[in-house]
Each structure stands twice: as structure tokens, then as C-alpha cells.
Length: 124
Image (cartoon, rainbow, N blue to C red):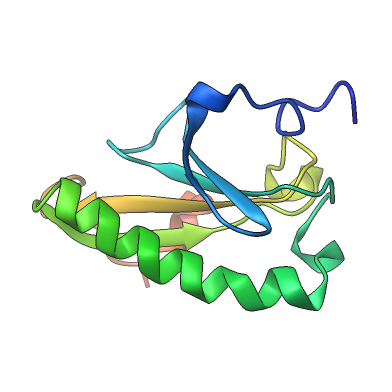
């Protein structure tokens, strides 16, 4: 699509390329090295990915985890997620998965992890 920012990625933003996906660093990172895994094909969400794309995601996640921890040995964990739909916070309507490196002490209390998208639900 001509007006989609992920369909028109400048090549200098791409840090890794796979058969069906690109990886870039997030322009508004939650933590250092926060990355996005983006389909080459324009689809709005994970639920529109075909089986070949879905099958490639575990390989990409594993490879990126390894590469990120080689770049920065202070990484001790990851949050992985997708925002699907406007009410879930999706702002770019082209599939992308966040891989967010975490480090000991980067937040006062990490318990609950992704539950923090609704702050009152993070602690349980």
C-alpha cells in the first residue's frame, strides 16, 4: 500500500531480513534494542498471516533473541507482543510483532509483565 509506512521501509532501517519478514528497531523504543518483526506482505494483523508466515515467526524470534543478547549481555528477559485492533492500541495497521529486551532493574516491579497494558491488572 502506497501510504503504509511499513510497506515503504527505507533499506537503512532494516536490521535483518527473512523470507517473509523484515526486522527494524522501533522508532519509539520502550527499551534499548526494542525491535519490530514486520511482514513483507501487507496484512493488518497476525490473523491475516498465511501459514508460511506463521511458521517463520518462531525462527525469527529465536534468532533475534540470540542476536540481541549477543549485542547486549545485560538483557535478561523479553516481552513479545502484538497490538491487534485500534482498541488494543494498534496504530500502524500492518502486521508487526514487538520484541522488547528487558534488563534487571529496568522497572521497579516487573511482575505481571504484559498485564501492564492495563495498569490496574499488572499486580495480582
